[in-house]
Image (spheres, rainbow over the protein chains, first blue to last red):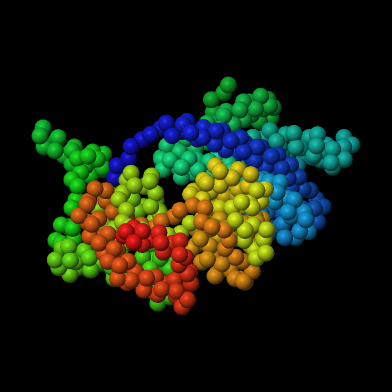
Length: 240
Length: 285
């Protein structure tokens, strides 16, 4: 088999514009889904540790239901399963206004929210119970204790696993191409079908994902150092 | 030293790095010595090539090879031969040919100028073109009515490319595979689904209520299906084309067409005058 590399396919014609468009869509999709996932994650993660059983039960159901079904199925669920429940007029309006993108965003956000909540729960549960009791003893309500004492510490503890989960979310955004969202992987396939140069197109996609993920990891490593609480979080291994 | 060099050259050839060094295989010679014509074809593209309920590998393209091409190749090599089938898919078919794993691709491959740079094509044996599948009574009757409408296509298809470039006023939605695009049409996420006409008829036949759907519009792209061969093997190409030409002249081709696409065939798809004229024009009629 002969293969002649022709890297110029990546910047000739429309390829460059497609890659930039795909990158922007991937970033937009991932950023919105991440915000949703973090909000749901904090809520469900915190609720899973409270004493009031119905709330704990509701949060547990959410987590187990959404994290144990494949993401691809959730994409189809939000795109094919939910719209028929709405009136026809609303459906048409949605389909004319980027329903694919919003379905993809919901699928990604809700799915990763369930996974992030587990990370947050483990962070909360690693904090000694006495801190919570001490917070109540100085007159805080349960909500205040979570907001002012427990969560600020827990969120600092979970930066490494949360970074991991965020990187997964970014890479999983490519699944949205199955419901016709023109994100980065979609655009690299597009270049491949136009130019028949698969290796070049996928190499470009791979490098862009790699650079994105490495940048996020670097930023998060800085965040971790910046917000570490001296004395509370012991660092093992080489110090700063 | 010479040995090492020979080894390096052999490796390079084996890896296909030294393209021009690879000896051009004479396909007829190969068939003559082995007694076998190896074709690459599809397993899931009814009615062109697929595995049927009785677990037999059959189809229109396969019949053409067995009943039309094989006799012609037998005449050319002067002995009787046997046809062997291997599975080939769009990404693997050209590599299978260039690596000599198969001698002929006979499935649903569209003859395009871009592909002609890599392989040679036989005479066209099936002709279709892009159309639209819509709900019966839809305002979309042809490509001129798609402005502002949501149209699904399969990613990578020639028709998606045409719509994007020439009809940007349509809202194009590209899906990676046919089932998802078709589901989007069934549920109303899109107003129309565009693909090769023959594939749309196949989908319509499989829909829960086939009568609710219709295929509309003239062909707005040309999708001539051809059999692909290694580039530059003129003798083999002549043998394949001679077989097809005879079949067009004798009417054998139209008999086989009827068996698969006639009123009682696997997928009724009456041949239009436009298509008939196109096929016969190839042999100067």
